[in-house]
Amino acid sequence: MTDTEIKKGLAGVVVDYTAVSKVNPETNSLLYRGYPVQELAATQSFEAVAYLLWHGELPTDVQLAQLRATERQYRALSPDVRAVIDHVPLDAHPMDEVRTAVSLIGAKDLAGSGSVMDAGGTADENLARSIRLFAALPAIVAYGQRRRRGLEPVESRDDLDYAANFLWLTFGKEADEVVVDAFNRSMILYAEHSFNASTFTARVVTSTLSDLYSAVVAAIGALKGPLHGGANEAVLHIFDEIGTASNVVPWLDTALAEKRKIMGFGHRVYKRGDSRVPTMKAALDTLVEHYDRPEVAELYDTLESEFVSRKGIYPNLDYPSGPAYNLIGFDTLTFTPLFVAARVTGWTAHIMEQASANALIRPLSEYNGPDERHIDGYVPDEAVL
Ligand code: CMC
Image (cartoon, rainbow, N blue to C red; front, side, top):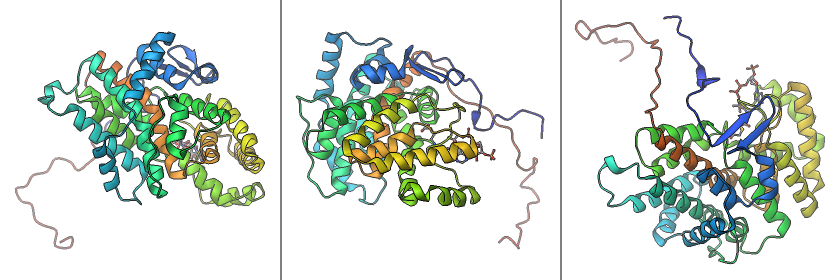
């Protein structure tokens, strides 16, 4: 062994520049292309934020209208994408369904594109691919939830913008304005977060000059894990386990004695609170009021104050978004696919950035296996055989 310093989990390692977003744990802020995320969530549509992430500037009215028109064009799922989703077992995790559907959309779009040398695509092609996925993901996610509930799919409504249409596709009825607004905010808050695990995964794949769809499929795999995107689903499992605010203290006593991780708390970068939480908590509060479910807020607040006072570890975005999605009516297993639909904008912005100034991502490792040895004279270990 040498004295090489190992940066386990790449903690604290700066691997590249990015102009897409800036996380500042000291000031507890998150900027997308320079704009504070809470300002964007309060004033913009998710489509406008997607445009910002891709192009670096907020759209003019004309540019936004153009993006919305293109997005509407790619909303519908083709019969073969529906068929491939139908082949995914009903009891498979919806993230596997989403990953599979994206993979087929990519294979179809890239069919006939020639050798791997052309896989990466031009900047214009990658922007078109990004919009295609952005537009198709609501239908994929909604189709999956309806399929698991034994419901027929619903067709998109051209008179509805992204967030309202997403809710229409999922529930087959027009959502109230307050619900559309909370959902739109959640999409914006989830859209981008610098070099998180799934975004870095997408950049690694892109760095080999592979295609955008392969990078997104790999990112979906990374997002599925409960230490990353899977945490919003895990928060609801915890809420279900606890039941009511009066059970928080005994539940937490046991969970901490068993050294369990409390999902929805903690962050690799933010150590004094996640900058997205206040905005999402405000959206959750409007939903609590709208659906008249004060017990949800009571459980939320009690668990937060107990856990923070005992461990000094603060909630992350998944903590308020899990119960918010539950109140809106999404199945718990659909929460992480919602994260995919939002984060695909950040992933694709990073994929295009990586492609525009590429260097193959290929770190080193420190070997700690057996010393050099040779086959000559090898004797099988009878005890092992
Ligand atoms: N519950 C209990 N203990 C925790 C938690 C938690 N949620 N988070 C951190 N800790 C403890 C951890 O046990 C460790 O304690 P010790 O030093 O005594 O072993 C210490 O805090 C440091 O934790 P770590 O896991 O080594 O730190 P990290 O920077 O690798 O952790 C994290 C970041 C997000 C993986 C972790 O906080 C965690 O597992 N949280 C729960 C899962 C979760 O909510 N994930 C969503 C992350 S934010 C949204 C996203 O990116 O998708």
